[in-house]
Length: 146
Image 1 (cartoon, rainbow, N blue to C red):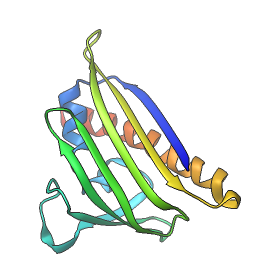
Image 2: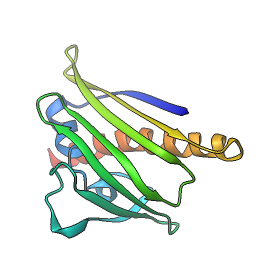
Image 3: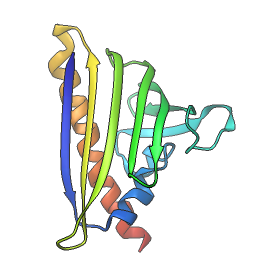
């Protein structure tokens, strides 16, 4: 099983970071990889079990199911149901915590998945970039909302 772990110190308060990242349907708002996203069946984007279907600018398609979302613990967990990314058994979790000095946010995002050895390096890079750009994009969007 492969594992990717990315952490970031975001120069915005926890409430602002969480306000952007908690929306399970907002990837295209803050992430440069993704062009469109929708929650299947018209369910709320914070309902456990909802499925987001989203597309990359290059035509990739991914469907993910929301497994947990906690406004108290600032955590989100989801799994890939189907993807053009060559992975299986993919589960990811994103967690935010307050950095008290400077009123910043510590974010960590990790995923575990099965991948063929021939695809491992490329998938690792793609997933790492996805998480890193998500944190960077959340900061940009939160600052624009101020």
